[in-house]
Length: 155
Image (cartoon, rainbow, N blue to C red; front, side, top):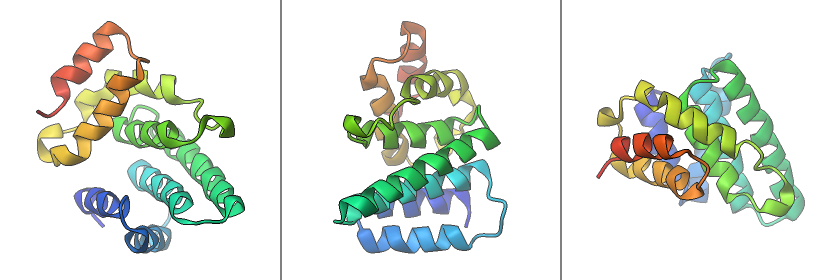
């Protein structure tokens, strides 16, 4: 699965439990080791599973698996802005009482500092725009970082 295909599959999975389950199965079947991006999409897809299950214990299990998988993705490539964008977006959506959103400030800075590494012209803006908006609206970036994100954000 190419990175553009993975992005599209993830975008589809955010609104569809069956698509999320299919993507999780696909990612888990990929040859190991996964790239940092594949690991991050696995982590994000695990977080989606928590959204689609009703059992609170299962939700927590998926959230914990997602947190661990994101830590592995960041360890593989700490400067990768796509990995950081995905983790930021997931942590932003996690209820604060779970205390699993502790990387957002670090991620916001890493995203702004490394966004130039992403070829945003070749990524569907409907994918990147909301992710960059999450970071901009967080209030966690310096004025310089905000300017960098504003400049890079698709119209």
